[in-house]
Image 1 (cartoon, one colour):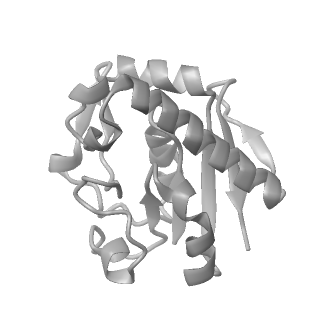
Image 2 (cartoon, one colour; image 1 turned 90 degrees about the vertical axis):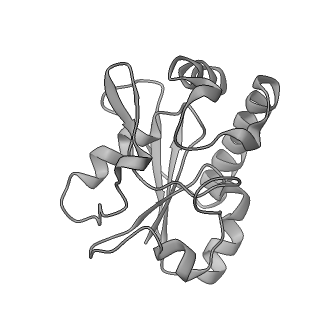
Length: 171
C-alpha cells in the first residue's frame, strides 16, 4: 500500500495516473462512476477517500481495500491523509507515503479551472466555500511540507510542471 496525497488542485490525480501506468499497481479502483472530465480529458478515475466521499478517510483495512478487486500495489488517494500521518505510520509501519506539493494559490486556481465545487467526483462539499478551500489547501500543504521535513523526504520536481514536487517517505 502507498498512501498518496496532495491538496485539491495539486494535479495529483494526473500524477497518480502516470504512476499507475507502470503495470505494478492495482487499477481496479477505476470505475465509470468515478470519472470526471475537464479540459477535454478525464481528470479523475480512481477511488478517493475523504469526508463526505464514497469512501471515508478511515484507516481500517476493509475500508482501504474496498474499492480494489485485483492484485498489485494499492495507491490509496486522499487529500486528508496529512491529518493522519502519525496514525498511518503507526498502523501501517511498512507502508510508503507519497506526497505531492504544489503552491497553495496555484493549486486553488487549478482546482477552480477544473470545476471547483461543480466537480462531480470526488465530492468537495466538506470544504464548504472557496474561502475554506483556500484555508484547507494551505493547512494540508503545511502538513505535507512539515512531514517531509521531519522525515527528510527528498523532493523531485515533476518533469512536466516546474511548480509541482513529489516526495516519498519510505520507512
